[in-house]
Length: 194
Image (tube, rainbow, N blue to C red; front, side, top):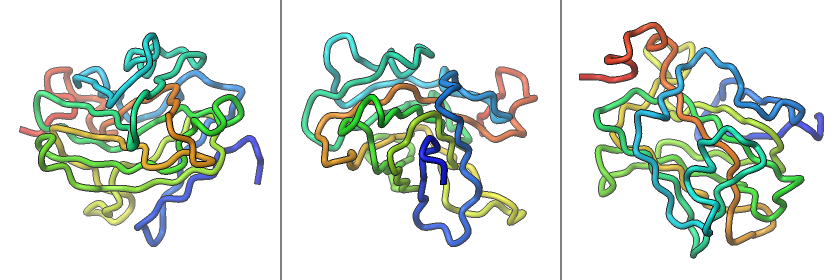
């Protein structure tokens, strides 16, 4: 296994689908067929150090990062104005630069509001270095050829653990992606279920 490629081990899936990895020499967000629905949400984080807030997750610069500043667990919350179909998450992590600040376990939660979030996926990483894209759901779709999207108003990414038992965390980029079939819909209907 190439040491430059992050290893990702999804849990709760008997036959996990391929996880997309982008090599470290390409730190721009990957070009993927799933539409980016990140800008439709209101973003917040559990804590941050001054100058290293939520804007660093979205600025497209691999040299900036969200830096948490508080007790664990750390989390990123996206609140959408309508129920959306969420297919995948793309996250940029750099273990060679961030060491013990690098997340090793993520818990993904979804729901209609902050008070009813339910665990939908758990993902673990082994020294990731680059963009990693994975399905939000662990449930098969109706056709049985992939995983179903999650329909939610709120998505929360929880950093459950860091490498080497680190306390604070660094995340250098994050994108939330809708199902492929929504890529061709008009902007008013994109990724929304009414």
